[in-house]
Amino acid sequence: MNDAIIPVKPFVVESDSLSSQSELSLGDCQNTTLAKEVAVLRSHLEYRVNQLQDLVEKEGAATERAQLLDRITAQMRESLTLNELLKTVVQDVRSALKTNRVVICQFTSNLQVKVIKESVESQYSSLVNTEIFDPRLSRYIEQYRTGKIQAIANINEAGLNEHFVRDFKTLQVQASLIAPIFTRNLNLNGEKNRGEKQLYGLLIADQCNKPRAWQPSEIEFFRTISRQLSYALDELLLLEHQQTIIQQARRLNQINDHLRQSSRVSEILMTAVEETRDALKCDRVLVYEFRPDWDGKIIAESVDSQWPEQLAPKSMILALPNAMCNPISEEESKPPTTSMKQV
Image 1 (tube, one colour):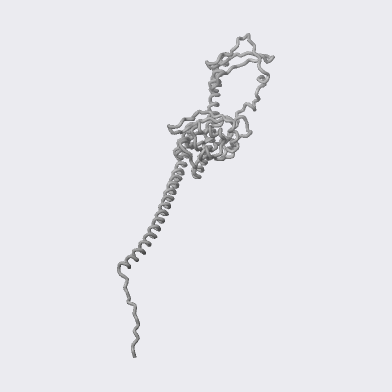
Image 2 (cartoon, helix red, strand yellow):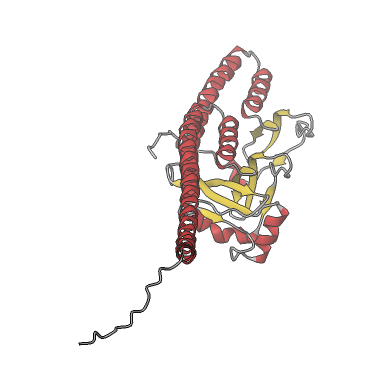
């Protein structure tokens, strides 16, 4: 029996060069993928690092402002004069917010404010003692009376009236933070409205070199400062009022002593007008003597040298309006009592 011959295909082993090329191609693909993943990971890490740095900076600034707030509050409580109090606030607030200008304005009417204290960088104009009159100001009075804080990041994009934008540019302002300042009404003429909260003025921080997005922590810091300033003003104004009453009482005793030492009517009258003008720091004090028909004449006068004397000769008779002839009752002439209310 003849054996069948089965053809066998020779087995050819792939060469080393082909195998190496295949492995190299696979390695390049893996390296490219890995490189992309590393690049994405590096980008994420850089983003997280930047976020962390921003957070650390913000937290550090917030901590610094909190410490500064405690220091400012302590200094405000230690201030003995209005000038010292306001100077402390504008300087420290500008330092804390790192802004170009901080001012305190006092309302002189519903339509006018006056800049009474300022801290400003040297390259910007000073606004101290500037009086700003604007009929449009009354629109914002009620908002300020409710304690609203106005944060303007960019005067050109805040939807402000074009007149306000022009005024801001005139004052070199690009961004502004505005908070109301309140005091308690002492109302020295009676009990009505005494102790009620009234709008004293505005605390304003200006960014002059560029727009600025005010952070919530900065706005809250500013709000707290304005409140602490309001409390400190209350205490200081009440203290000044009480000191004024004490000084007036002492001066009254001195005048009474001097009057008792006078032996003639002319001396008594001159002592009275001179001592009274000095005590009240006014330009003129005079004594007017009435006749039975309510006509009369000036019989003693003390007047500042820059004003003419009104002392008339004895033969000259002057008539006063009827309203001036009605004496003030003893009850009306009593000075009001004062009390300190907790804010």
